Length: 91
Image (cartoon, rainbow, N blue to C red; front, side):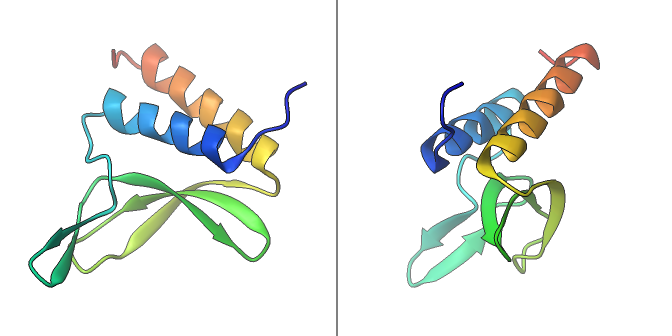
């Protein structure tokens, strides 16, 4: 089995954003300020674990969608999430 990297995680998370027509970046810079892109899914690394988070509101709050103790675990969880999107009728 291939070792999963952060680049691999970023690629599958980008796929989620494309499938859901969500912003590809969590923040955009406008002038000297950053603006949260509501609906964006992105990778977070906290407490030794890897998480899929979704930007929830304009102040930058996030919701944790999936958790993985390792990169491989999160990668597999994200693949299942994507399968669920397709089975739920999103294409």
